[in-house]
Amino acid sequence: MSNSEVFEISTDDIDKSDVLKILNTPRFYSCHEMENYFYSLSLEYKNNDDLNSWRLCYFLYAIFNFSFSRSGELIGFEPKLILYPQRGYRPSDFDEQFEKTLLYLKDKSKNYYINSRVNDVLWSNNRKNKLAATVAISNYSSMINDACDDLTQKGDASGIHVFDIVDFLERGVAISVLVNGRKNVPDKFITDAALRLYHVLMKLNIFDCVHRLSKILCNHELLDKLLLAQNAEKIADYHINAAYFDAVKQLMCFASHLYERAADKSSSRRCKIKNAEITLYQANKAQSASLKSHWLRSAVGEFRSIGGMEEKVRLIRSELEGVRDLIYDDMHLFSTPLDLTKVINDSENTYKEMDFSMTLKTLIATFNCPDIDHLIAQAKKDSEISVFLSMTGSTIYDDKGRVIAENPPLNSAKGISKEAACHNYLRNCHVEHKIYVNGVFEVIRREVISSYPLNENTFDPITQQSPFVPPGYADIFSLGFYRLWQGDYASACYLLIPQLENSVRWVLESRNKETTKIDPKLIEEATSISQMLSNLRGDMEEIFGANRVLTMDLLFNMKGGPCLRHQQAHGRLSINHCNSPSPVFACCFILHLTCLPFFEAWDDIISPYLKKDK
Image (cartoon, rainbow, N blue to C red; front, side, top):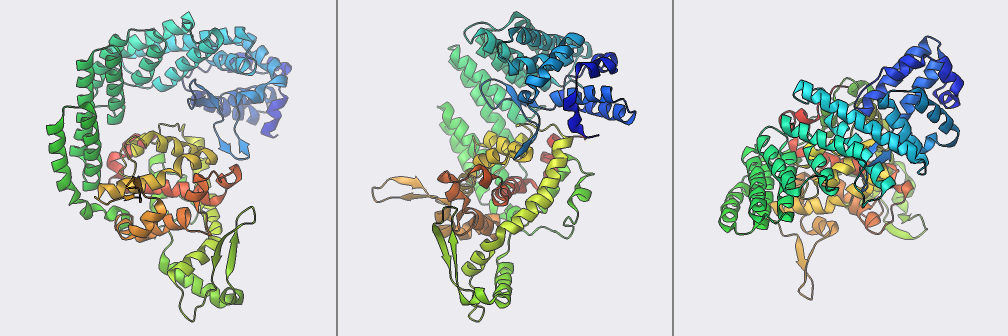
């Protein structure tokens, strides 16, 4: 029996199923756990030939399959998996013919862990159904109160998904805002639950989600801004060396912002200094000169923004000058060839026993960049095999029939130039990219997305520390990598591809390399990736390695190939382009560059924050 038969579910199926056990048992705060629970239960009933119970369980699995999305101003839902043109479930899939089933489930179930999602889906598909909205808010509030009871009883957050609880809270507030209007105070049920959760977290000194929860309370004016600022500073101080440093920094910045809004400038300045000192502490902890330089530069910017910190800035800059001389000693992280003798022959068999951290580390290690000597040898071989390549050149057209490049014949007798070898490679590079994307990355990505509840913050431990990511761009990289692993390649391409040029410029500037130019009107402006490849190629190869710089040229710059920098800058990447092999390969390449500096220290500074059991 196929899984699609679940969509033939009727109220009779529900009545004939083991409905009391199915609806009353699960009480998980995580939607991911609810989804897994119903999927496992559906398999049990299917193996026992109880098709009515199987249909009900699979239907419940389906409505818990889509996840919360905070990509907009208000939290909503999005498919868990996007693999164009296919995708996972979303609320609109349960409209019309399934509305009767959802209404019947709502009346049948007394379990608000289930009813919250059922009523939310009903309201999402019919915004006029205010009763469903009210019940959904009430259900979410009851779940939050349960969580508060559990937190109080345990005295800590061990085994409790605080982030999921705040998702429920934010969704309840979002529904209330959309139903009652932005100018009105959110529903009393969700407001009381929010305040109770906040006070429980404060009392127990639980750091998780305090920042998000405080922002919700602030945005809807549910607590005094000065009180929120004082509590945020207090809990950030308490966890300053225990919690993930960037989360502490964000909370400290939030406290500074609230102090400023409350006209307490001295407290705001104090928090800004604490925030900069955290960055300086990361620099002192750094084990490599490149990482230390990265954090020192960030600290300089943060202290400068405070004002009146000239002496502190001078001392940091003095230290930075000394560190830069040592960067050459550890930049081999970029350029030393990796040992690829254990390259994956069968991606699925190789990766299936790995956790997420080891999967990502192995993927970075086995990413293969083209070698110019290999390209020359291949071009020479092609010219000997194909008489046409040695006799005539080739003309490259775009999708509108316009000539965008012309390549001369390959003449092996006179020797194959590097440029000719590259153009020969670009003729068929999409084949190599397709083999990698479909044969390696897709296999891994599907296994990961089915086993781990990734979100837009999953990659923060990498992006917040990587010297390849300029300050202020970490969230863009994190969201781009999340979209890449989710299979939303259109979003990934438009988030990640524009970042390469700026990141290369940032790394070069870290090495005291000039990356600007002065035009005839004496206006200084940043150079493009093509100009950096022309004028600073030697420096780039010294930092990144010749093969990686060649890959940048082939993917982003050279005419006749993907030319992604030009295509993206001019809005020429359509949905079909984004889902083709070369742009996806380019996104994987950017992931490779971002993670590579940590490769030798991966197990110490990255793995503890990524390692999760399946």
